[in-house]
Image 1 (cartoon, rainbow, N blue to C red):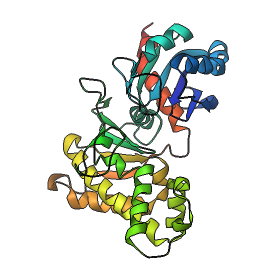
Image 2 (image 1 turned 30 degrees about the vertical axis):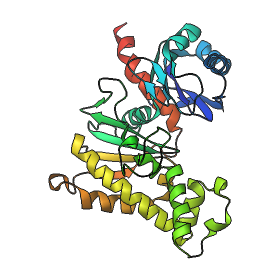
Image 3 (image 1 turned 135 degrees about the vertical axis):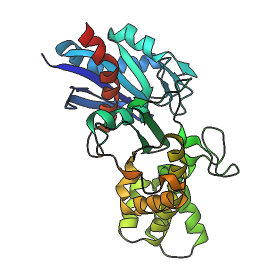
Image 4 (image 1 turned 90 degrees about the horizontal axis):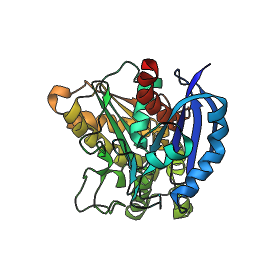
Length: 320
């Protein structure tokens, strides 16, 4: 009988799930609204109703979960800004008590990095970094084939390195964090400023602010919109400078970019690559590959959670 891991991705808006075999094939995937304003037990009841038959009808060796501010060591979700379940949620214990299967938890960007390593472009790669460019900016760092969790279990928060200590306000309470510039919400703020600074015509001027998102800006750039292109150039410049800083810490072979903004292609990647090399410490110049994730067109959220589960449980199953 085929073995599966239940891969789960908890987002502030939706939760995705699916059974994933060791080769990365997804079976019975689905999703539902997270109900982030309800309590954790309501969420677990809802998740249970969606997946319990999958667990009972298949050989499921465990679950892997990617969640905002998921702590791998403690199995807790801590201070997640978009989940109103409490400051510290004992997720691993609550999940195992209800579902009766082992579960591993990490943050969503770490899970994405593991998905890239097991099922994507980082197969066989021991040193790489993956950035997720979504509503915020997350990152997963792999060194010598192992995900870096650090002492606290929360290492790799590159989205909260400082671009400008007196810069944009961040939801974390600090100012000038990288994700306030390089993310879907960050580029939206950039567009707003550019429209104030320039008088050039732009289709974005006709879009209500609350309807501007990464896709709208990407579509405008691909239609040669001046403001949209300038926004990606500025975003890519800041990203590239911080990628050069990241290389100093771990000397990765490749940096992968994942998320909706990456669909802008050359409009983001070209300036990011240019400024990464321009600011690179000389011993590392032209040594680091920058490319999109190979899981962009797959259910990477579910694959990431499942990759965590396979990494955690496969050895234990083989020993048993």
